Image 1 (cartoon, protein in one colour):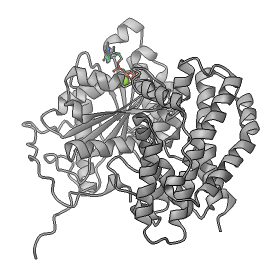
Image 2 (tube, protein in one colour):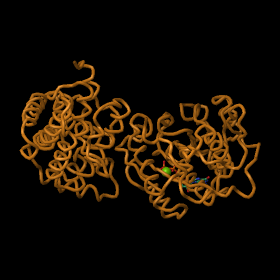
Image 3 (tube, helix red, strand yellow):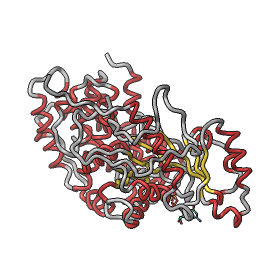
Length: 229
Length: 260
Ligand SMILES: Nc1nc2c(ncn2[C@@H]2O[C@H](COP(=O)(O)OP(=O)(O)OP(=O)(O)O)[C@@H](O)[C@H]2O)c(=O)[nH]1
Ligand SMILES: [Mg+2]
């Protein structure tokens, strides 16, 4: 049985998996003048939760499902998930970011849970997608599928929210209050994602935000930027 | 085991390094004391993995200039890699590439998302990735220099990332800096006080800086430097040679398993 402490540990932004260097697309949205204050940040976060949040949480939950119980054909299942998530990530820049974050999480996971099923991840040269690694990591920590989806959905919110504090100089208390307001939506997204993981990989959610994809591609070409994505 | 600490299982198929014509036996260079029974002064031995040296310090103190100087110093001597951590850009990496002091393939830039200290201390994965990628791209390395983004006096490197750290301050920041202390000044394996050529212009008293550095650092070494006057940072390079010798003694090259 997992302890609540392990849930908190893996959801903590201080868990060393490279999240601090990413704004979840917020830096580009700020530069485009689309996010300027608390209200527009809230809209951005709600949109992110419904798209990248839902998809990432569903794939993390599906990877968790592949990890426990001791599935046969786990490597095949994970390879299919990896390909399906690639297809859902239209922007090459975001594919690269997801794999880079997967590598960072894997490095932490291998150091902390050396016996986890990471060897079954697809051997792509640039690493597996982050949600897949997260699913295996959460399984190794003994967390449930719903807890796994919650960590994934929550992470898509908190990273961008703290980038908002840094980029826009927003009042940190009011940004936290905004996250409190989004908590129900976050839990709902996680529950949807955990249920969706019962479906085969090709049926997993595919919610997308074309503008975020376009922004991500432009952001990757900037000469001066504070965040890697 | 971290992938970056895995000892190569075979001797890498590369040209052996010819030891420098005049071995660096300058005993006036302050250096860490050797392990008992280890002679730190034979020609540089190959280690099982690269020595990773962090170079930190406040903005503009001369970290990139020192990296460039060390690249010049070790050009024909060591298999070198450089990882830079910029706050906003890949400026430092671009500077080094333009300066032509090192093959651009041997330079990697890590983006730190407003938090240069996080990337070298609390969440070191991106830097470890960069170190691994360097070795994958150009083969085994003897020395990797990791430059931190310019930060404040509290920024230090994690021991999980680097084996040694050099903290670079400059005289133009004021001769009070060593007195102010902070973990970089007090605990770095080497403190470099750079831009001594500017001391008369900014009214910095090097004797005061020396006295304060000694008071803060105990037996740890401090070197005064002007990269303008010494473009290969001779004494810093000598210090690194000594540390490389200690490192090689601790991390010997794995002996290939031959037929018995
Ligand atoms: N006069 C003098 N200038 C120096 C010396 N060393 C470096 N500089 C100059 O100081 C400026 C800053 O040097 P950098 O090497 O870029 O400093 P840095 O610590 O890498 O700076 P950041 O990475 O931005 O924190 C440059 O204009 C260098 O040419 C020196 O010994 N004497
Ligand atoms: Mg620099």
